[in-house]
Image 1 (cartoon, rainbow over the protein chains, first blue to last red):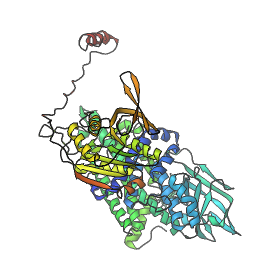
Image 2 (cartoon, helix red, strand yellow):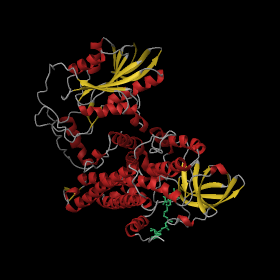
Image 3 (spheres, protein in one colour):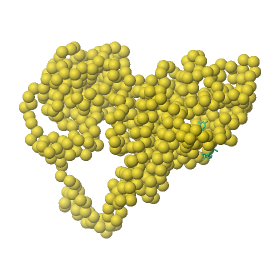
Image 4 (tube, rainbow over the protein chains, first blue to last red):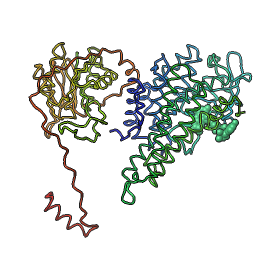
Length: 389
Length: 250
Ligand SMILES: Cc1cc2nc3c(=O)[nH]c(=O)nc-3n(C[C@H](O)[C@H](O)[C@H](O)COP(=O)(O)OP(=O)(O)OC[C@H]3O[C@@H](n4cnc5c(N)ncnc54)[C@H](O)[C@@H]3O)c2cc1C
């Protein structure tokens, strides 16, 4: 039933987790092996998300797992991080789905919504009965979201929104969109339900990356929403950036899963692939690559564990998350490249997962702040000098 | 209905078994242990019966080492109400002794139904459910792959040589569970969080001195290397001759 996956834990990092955290991790790990691994190849080929699994994900409780109340599981930061690791071991698209739902949609509603908004959305989103998306980026405003052109104007008890969002995960499938738009020049968040007149999603096709995940354009043409659609307790860029800090925390853990998957695949392969009458794992150059991957995975595991502890203690700052997100995505992508090399020609087919992960990680290293933008956030913290603007 | 599920912690089925230095046990270093796969069906069935009746309780019991706590916690996370660890440091491979230890505990309370896996995938004895039923004076149906409950009567189906047997049974009963009975659920996250707060009990296992002992364990001989008789159609006569004269399957 399950695949052969064995997660690397070279430094017994397991010991640092609580019993509960380990159990949660194990439960998600076997779910991914049993339910997700058998279908991912086909969905990646067809560029579809396995929507039939959304309900199961909800039943397990992975959506908004670190939130409390409203049907959410109320897990420790590390437990919710480890869930991301396990999901991304399957595919970055699966983890993206869960991150967007929990960190980018449920989190802002939970943190800044009215009680009515919370009741309306959160319990159903926790169950996976409602899907959310997060619209911040625009075609011309990626690293610089503050320049966004999407606008809201007040019209009595209503707001009228115009503009468009680009690169929006789940944009075409979402039942509700958290759309960031400027109201009198100030960034505000609006909850826009699917089917609202003038509002639609349009899938971005022909991606090489995150194929098993919907990425869309959101188009807003005179979208009229009642004033109760505004998230009242947030304004300015710190709103979306606060959501992104949550999601980036998950990505930091998540990318380790992708690295684990390709390390496992390459290490296994090196022991059975024979050249010059020896398994290729017997050659020093091949071992060196595996060692690099194992060391980076181990360092990232420890960094993320500490990040989780800081989050739990309320001491985590956004620049800590930047360092972890930047490091995990980078080492995971480099691991894919090394693993692909070890797999030789076989590595370019989708019978092996490595190249799928590699392609996915090109998105993961870009979204939620590119590698370099995170470098500049850390640099600003170190020098007190802002090199971003 | 008060239900007990007997579970066991066993080496994962994909473990590459190594014999320990004493020649009588397996090397446990580096081996991952898991809940015996057949016991997962038993647990799932117990939870379904409780859900169907919307009443009663599910208690999981194991005879095993301290580490078996992990498997008990897993069962609690999936929905069992209570867990009991009957402690021993020995590897329990004698079904006779194990059934006595379990019966001693089970007899302390009143239960209607005992569910077990058909066998534990370490010693593969396939004896415990029947022995337990005999000790407790319960009815017993083994290797059940379909089970339903209506008006207090169980209808159990089991595969027998070339046919399918349907048995009705009343409580109290021991039912051992086979593959195909159900699709075990995953522990959900709220279940895992709730598990810690559920009743958990530990006491030494009342294991009688075993009447049997393992003399030695050996691994099966390594498979002989294959032999290539030739290639293409020209090799067919040699292949037929070998299958007929050496392997004697034709
Ligand atoms: C698959 C996918 C899913 C996505 N999902 C979502 C989503 O759900 N919601 C959402 O709102 N957005 C989403 N995004 C958008 C994503 O967050 C942006 O792509 C990202 O912020 C980068 O913006 P950009 O693509 O416009 O790149 P740009 O900002 O144009 O950057 C291009 C290059 O310039 C560099 N650069 C830019 N500014 C600087 C600077 N000041 N100094 C140095 N270098 C700089 C960058 O590092 C990068 O190398 C998604 C993207 C992808 C690919």
